[in-house]
Image 1 (spheres, chains in turn cyan, orange):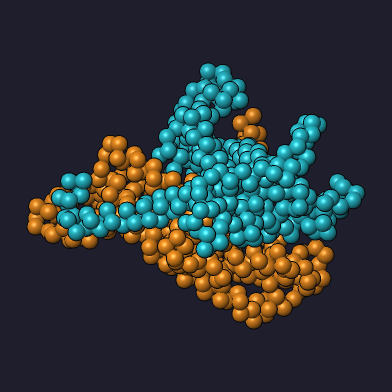
Image 2 (cartoon, chains in turn red, purple; image 1 turned 30 degrees about the horizontal axis):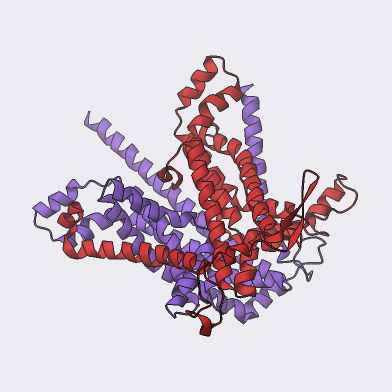
Length: 307
Length: 277
């Protein structure tokens, strides 16, 4: 702090503090506190606010219960509240998306970091960056075209003789997963690449010279070194998937509810902002838990993730 | 064995690039198909009618203007905030620093839906209704984090003794900031402004909840996709992709030219050295 004062003087120091305060207090902390506080209050008409009906309760959170539907897990049928089911499935499918992107990104990141000649790297990165600059909505829209019932994918597969009748792709969660993987796989590639790139190639060669088969070199040398990258990529992909509203709305069907869609319906459909706040807070909590879990499992700090 | 394995990796890279790029070609191609539904199959003949329709669509141009205004505002607010925050956190240490750092990084990890709802609720408590101004504030809350991280990374390579020297030579505080610190940060600030701008254009979740009745491009395209879509959107998408590609190619060319110039300088230096000896 004295460092700041001595270099830039009173005025500029206060400007720095003021701007930072505005950001963290007014734009980040207070809105989130307001949301938390509202989530415990009932949804009332303007005149009843502050009146006898206005007291704190868990009512909004309990709205996630109710409307039981069948939920089948490994052949067992449970009676589960529909919104709880949607919440649960959102988490599960986001985790599946995270795993798929990791499997796809790992060889690619390794190739970029250790195999390809450094000369062609800039061109490859440029090609990889192009889809990243095309907005998310257009990328999922592209898959909406490809997966259409009478669309190009079915036509190609039929003409190759792989399938005899058209497949209805837009059904259940698979199109949502396909769309999310396509949209977010690069958020796994780049952190993995960054962490692998800092590994000394001599270590890989030493392992190979000492007779380690390729899979053990990966398991014992490269994977442990890439831990921060894995954590960072997993956190990004999971958060973006669980928080995505565009992809599930565009590629989803009636049988694939996403929790963000539930929130949107409550906020903009029924206009119940208090229940919306409660559900948004549940989503935030789930994501926070996932981040802490990743940090614990991979033994990394927040500053390693945010790179 | 080695070359065999490398061949597989090259193949995978090629497949991955195809996987990334083919959907974009499909989408662009559909803009020229005379079919009423956006698709490339079945092909019903070449047409430019969707580009004409796009040109005549006033709502799109309104949404486009709103998007640009929001993006400019977001960049204009995020850059000073992110830069100030980075300078501040770089000058402190210990527990306060890690708490502040956590707070500054956290917004990146908050789902956009949550940011949108919390911003809407907070400002409506202060009797400020929804609209694009709230979209700007909501977007700044997490986009400033990107700027902060970029500037903070750049500050690591800064030599503080330069500032000491300037102060010893009688520079004022404002001069130290303007003539010494900021010029060193300009690359990061420029990158931060570009990232803010593009992140804002991309944004959907925050905007959807805070926009009030106003349209931005993503919100408009989204409403179109749900309520009867025409290939006009593909025409728009193709133009956006071409614009992006143009920027990327221009960046790559200027990078290569810079590299060549540097190499030439180096070669010249070597020749001069040889001549002296």
